[in-house]
Length: 460
Ligand code: 5AD
Ligand code: SF4
Image (cartoon, rainbow, N blue to C red):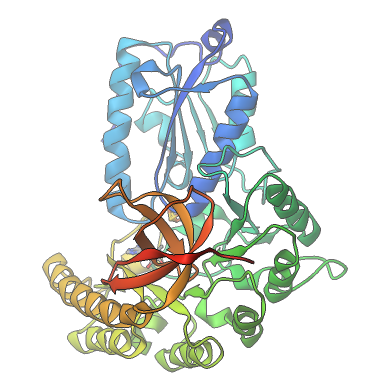
């Protein structure tokens, strides 16, 4: 479907320079990587003198940071883009910018299909947006070269005490269902010293919890020159040593590269949280092979056993896809068996969605959507039942909770997260960013409840 807008394209950058304080509106879709890129985009825009607008209609610059992981992500975004088109019809000087994975995946046709888009750029290319805004360009601009990590920018963090740090860009895996290798390019690791410096600066700025981001964090460093090359486990140790960093998280590891040194780090480094997100995708080895995951069910279970051996209390979460092409009832039952056996604390479950230019989209035996939906229902039941059972291990214990704000369901209570990444709603006093001890009195599959301990503040 091709779309047109009656007006001819306005001069893109010029009107923005006329206003004392131009305003932007940014909508983010997708993963934490995108959330972080959006923080960098906001930091960059504010250093250029833009302020954030509350709504699209008040903005001179309407931006989207997009995702294309499943068809639903595309559909959601297109609906928002239509709304922006309406704003532009009424105020033709509005500039529309689209960044991220969707933009990258339709790069050859974006301006043809969506002529009201003024600037489009690939994931992480925040500096290209700056280049566009500083140019006098009258024509639409697209920036889609893969460049690795594109420089440190001041990020406007959503929370003062939590920071994201991108340790690598891109992905060298070739999972047959996944659009990411084509939207984010080959894996490029950032220099360890510049990562340590960045985290040190974040700590000095009040950040106590960092989340390290990469498509496959535990292959970190393999592409670095010999003189600076370190492993992911070594990087974790260096970050753990930084004063003021109380919690380290990371996402996502790949089960094939999850080695004992990283698992041991969870047992040994005081700030590395007791939580591992280990994407399973399927419990059937033939399906894993067709997905090109490069591990079998046995190898995955062996990683889980190693985690349970060294860090028995570790929170374990995962991603699972149902309805991959060729998935039989017997394959799906193997996934259910793994779910029963592992007892995940949480699982993100997806119905397979064919993506453009991926090999799986061409496979025979695509599973009918109704079959996918029915499997998903059975999977969610098993995941939730096991998560509920596993969560009972916390009842009666006192857990360290980092306060994030008020409870979403009851503003009289506080909400935070345990080191296991469990949401905890509790009665108590404290402000966002503080770590307190909470006596856990109840647990569902999703959240824990409790009372702040009288011995209160966590030390660390
Ligand atoms: N269809 C369904 N789910 C997908 N994921 C990635 N690609 C697809 C797809 N084509 C899921 C995987 C991944 C998570 C981020 O999204 O489970 O781990
Ligand atoms: Fe993130 Fe993947 Fe979506 Fe890109 S396609 S934003 S990498 S989830």
